Length: 125
Image (cartoon, rainbow, N blue to C red):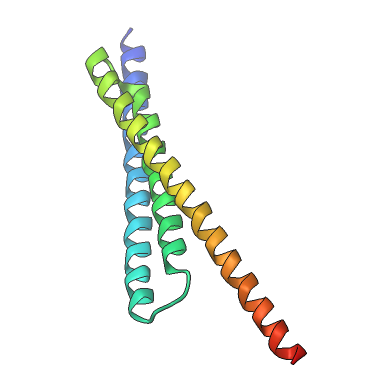
């Protein structure tokens, strides 16, 4: 019985470190993306909104992975409910950001097509 308790405590420790690693990765991705986006905004880099949205999306995926891993060590129903709500909220945010990315990519594609058509019209004249 003592061996089983020892294995369980090792498992909890591994999961806790895994959650910490995923959450730190999410925070790191978000910070790097934010700094690069601020610099890009100052330099007026095109498509910076798309880059920022992709970075936020990736950071949320890491954070969501940490939350899912955390469900492994939940012991009470109330903790599970709170964790479930957090996962739903982060999932909804991820969906919204992915939608924003698609809209921004479509806008960029339209702008590139318009620029290509205008360059074609100028070269024909």
